[in-house]
Length: 500
Image (cartoon, rainbow, N blue to C red):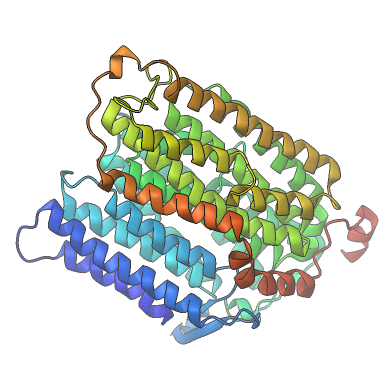
């Protein structure tokens, strides 16, 4: 079952890429959508068959691969990775469906999107550190090419910057993984056999720094964030959906799986600094978003702030806060994908994303009333309005983090208020008021443009009203992970030193 999740999009990429005859964009898109849909349906079947009561890895697959390196093909899924797998399957389908049928080199484009899905899926399933790294690096080249070939005017600069940052991220993560395995005396990279808690505290901290910076670049956290706004602005709308909705979650997933879970003593030691780092990212991202006039760049900076909530929850390392971190990953994935889709429709129809140009798009006769209404729903969800999934995920993060880091949690909560400020600016300037003369004759918005956004909007509301449907799959795994590893963020400095 798990290998099928990897092989189905891989087969689709090969079929499109090596199609023996000429193929137009519509056919290539249809084939890619079929294979992506099959992959998504497989994740749904996996979720139906998944037993939340079992906290161990389920549907496990293990095959020997390179014995000399201790590398094995180990796959598994638990409550941490399952919702991210389903999210990846859904957003891959939406990205393909939302792609322009008239784009150039469609065979190459859709093959790259499916290869991107392969890398992300494999990373979430990998139960071997080296195997995770291979899948983590696999998604680098497709995303680079998708930005560099089909991006905007400065696509070369943005793609190169992304490549450099992500390459540094991979080097740091690999160095930490190698050090963790070799210094702990393990003969395998398998997660099940790795126990790095026997290492001295100073060594654990050194390894954790590599993991924090490596995944911090991917998330991204301040000051490693500068590649993200450029990548989003230059990337096409479907690629921005995947980048914000799924790819950034590789960083937060890595922090929980390999940082908090494998190096709990070091994690507890640096937790106060991590919480402070989270606050800086939240406030900096929100402040930068307020200053933007490009709608897409504003949404991009909002991602930096919202990913900081996940770091805060992970630093607190209580069962409730880590559960909130997972919910925030899913919440941000759905909301950011919705916002980028809507910004893409506005740019496609109005020819601009500039708030100084756009005005009155909510006009019921000559504007985009449906798109405007969905945008209002999306910004309300991002700002944490009750009844939306954004509210419940942020509430759980703050509720779980406050007993451990009350000051940092209160400061991070300011970010929620700032989110409302900059998105109110966006909605007020672009959608309310008199329709501006520059966009007076807007093309018709078809249902094909609205359907993906409707799907995401419905999910945002459903999970906001009934969050137990998400919590049900994740809570047992998170509770077992935190309690088993005994991650206590409030460990004192003296106690931490005595362990070394």
